[in-house]
Amino acid sequence: MEEPIYELKSEEIGNMEVAPEILRMIPYNTGMEPILLNEYGRNIQNLVDFCVSIPDRDERTRCAYAISDIMTILFPSLKKDPNGQQKIWDHLNIMSRFELDIDFPVQVLTAELANPSPNPIPYSNSRDIVFRYYGKHIQNMVQTVSDMEDSQDRNNLIGVIANHMKKLMLAHNKESVSDAKVLRDLCFLSDGKIDLHPGDIYLHDYQEVAPANKQKQGKKKNNKQNY
Image 1 (cartoon, rainbow, N blue to C red):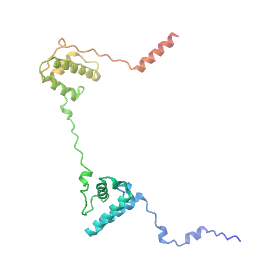
Image 2: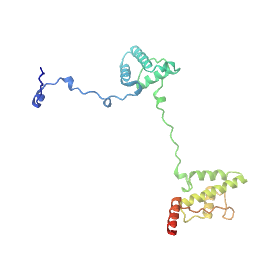
Image 3: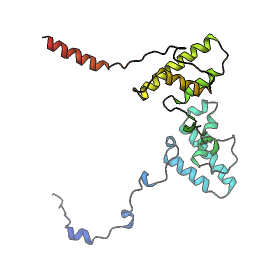
Image 4: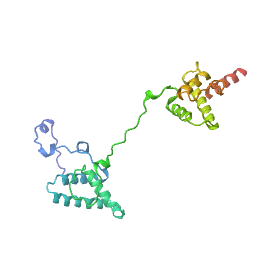
């Protein structure tokens, strides 16, 4: 004999009494406190939080030791690691947000060591740069070379720096570039220690080269015209 099938109508469902525990929503991880070390999981984090809340210090210490034993069981490889116990207690202190007040068996990691403040990055003052198109490095190089004793190496370095200054000036302004302007700037940056004129040094004549793609396109067009 087939069992009868009962169907509930919508008005019957609306009149039903639902137990309060059924109405409780399942707690999701997104609504909980974050896990500080995911490899130990939510349960270990909850144990550590409970341990921190224990008012008696001796009982809190015993609880911390019990949790460390559980953490060692979860990661048995730490038993063979000579620094295994150090890692366990460091992790335990991290999960307690460095609030666990007990007698640690080792010197544990502190909040200052775990989150050190980065050293400030020394930024150069842009006002110290006399000519922006030469940059700070060229300015420092000129000052260094200008303090060198007269020698062939010093003359060679001056030639390299002056040619590079001309190249940088061309990249900044292609129309008003001259050897005399470069040498005047070189004299100014060296505080008059490098005083040269266009006849004293040879600077290369830099020419703008068309990109390779444009040259290839020009060759293709010429080939088509030949055909």
